[in-house]
Each structure stands twice: as structure tokens, then as C-alpha cells.
Image (tube, rainbow, N blue to C red; front, side, top):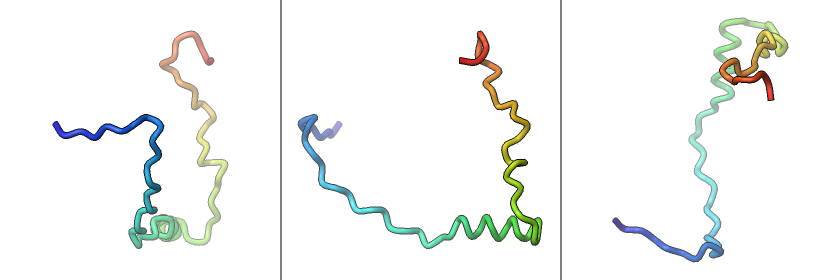
Length: 63
């Protein structure tokens, strides 16, 4: 196994940000949504669900 050991307080050189992929994911999602429901605004209230988002596997109720 090849490993690199450094002092725990040693600072590493800042890494450059990754190169953009060139894919507009938000634009793709917006185009798909507009194709499915043209002209209708996004109903944010319906995105939240029924409000029953508690963890039902948790014993003893909510924390």
C-alpha cells in the first residue's frame, strides 16, 4: 500500500474549482417541465407533500 503522511495541521494548497461540464441541468429540467405542463407556474405548495414527513421508523415519537 502506498500512503502519504502529513502533519495534521499542515495546510494543503487550494485546489482550483472543477471545470464546468457545459451541461445546463437546470435548463434541461425547466425545458422538460415546460414540455409536460406548458404555461403553468410551479405550484410550490404541492411540492411539499401532505406534511406527513416524520420518520415513522423512529421509536418514542418525534425528537
